[in-house]
Image 1 (cartoon, rainbow, N blue to C red):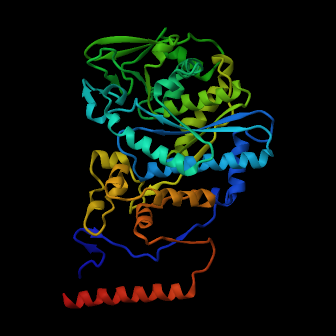
Image 2: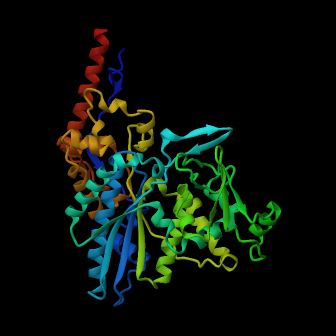
Length: 461
């Protein structure tokens, strides 16, 4: 008998177009806007009230190696609606005492690898970053357009800015953060890169025609180089003194060694950090901003929910606690716990996140462009505009999620997003509320019709 769910190689499933939001964990405790925004304001230290004027920078980071896909659009939208909500609730809860400037910062990871320029030479993987190849320049107008569209929609006197990795690395606290991390690299190397066991710290070859960097720091050395036993002793018995590691030597397979000094701001700005290391350095720098400004400058990061859970706990929070435990040795002050808001993941049919790396590298989502689906526009903002689809369909729905924060603590499927564009608006069912009796009858009738159709197909064969 033919598979009734298979047509021209595509599988189809039936549903009732009803969306449920069962409460639990975050969706239970932060179900309403009062609870959600109040918790964030307290976590960032913006309340209780003072008469001091304050600023909040909401960071969204992106590797701009493609036009924004649906997941990126969702994250950007969450950031802007959180910005608007925090500004509103700050005024409400602070009763007019002090003002809050809110900035949404698009942090471009221009040091991300240009995959077309990655090569393996003598067992070492070398990469060239977008900063070197400028490949990302093709996509930046789409990010600017999306940011401006969101800014216009939310209003509320919110400011936007755009930074690159050199801006992060040029912050005055970064050299001391890097020195502390390098000093403890035998422990932090495995926390931040469990596979390689080395810090993902690199710098491009300074030769203009080259720009290669040792991706996994296989040949990187630190000077003055303490012995392994000496550094291992320090890892388990901090406070007993060790040499400061202020010079890093990188190796180009073609042009030989070159150095970066952590005492040179110009050199530090040249560095490239892998994702976990960049997250740690950036978060610590943000925390020191707040500490040194006595709470006047605060930071919050909005990122996809795939960066929550074990990843964030092990690579970031455990590393922050590790650095805090070494404060007497590294002279790096401890910081308060950072604040994150996680945006819902957008999932494919199997529950995997919609991944730009898959569709950029392997064309994994070609089925979305098949006849009868026509969902390929969800893979890129540029395709969305070319096909005449209005991104406001997504933006307005995300606005509803932030207005009812219980809807933020869950993923959504690409099929759900597609229906926002087709006029088949999903019906949101409140948690624990029984289905309408007429709807149940209609669903059961549809099931019987499908079963009859399957039986008929089998008889015809």
